[in-house]
Image 1 (cartoon, rainbow, N blue to C red):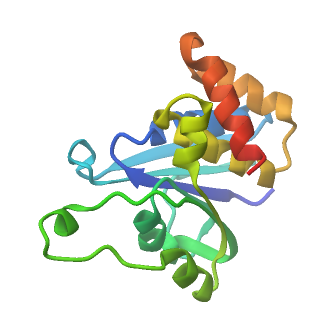
Image 2: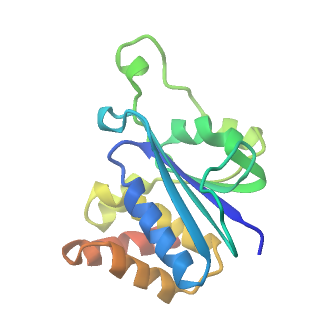
Amino acid sequence: METKSIMIVGVGGQGSLLASRIIGNVLLSQGYDVKVSEVHGMSQRGGSVVTYVKYGDKVYSPVIEKGEADAVISFELLEAARCLPYLKKGGKLITSTQQIDPMPVITGTAQYPENLVEKLKSAGADITAVDALSLAEQAGTSKASNVVLMGVLASKMDFPDEIWQNALEQCVPAKFLELNKKAFELGKNA
């Protein structure tokens, strides 16, 4: 099998590490060689965080170059736009519609771009945009929007639901498991 690439992008504190662990667990359980790498920006200051996941028969490096990602999963809309150049032609962009103002917007030196979903579509992206924050709150906590997006991803990948459920059980602390399973289901059905 050729190597496949998934980029997970967001803002510090949105749960990209858990998301990459869930995806990695699913892929490892299916016998793939998996490499995961995190690139931290100013994550503790609300800056961009990027995680690379590559899988296949044999993976030598987790790094994803521009035009290589089979999928980009974005926890924040502006991050989806920033990472669009990494998506390969025919790749899938899954994004939350959540908007988190970056520092230039907070300080008033810039404005948050309008109509980003439409702009991404017009740029040719195969985009699935969901209000992951609202779905997470429906599940019980805003902190589960990352797992909502894992549900959306699961609906686009050809792995049995039991594999995803097992990954959730392996990666999510027991006291938060039921809430995250609910978030996952809401994302899968979004």
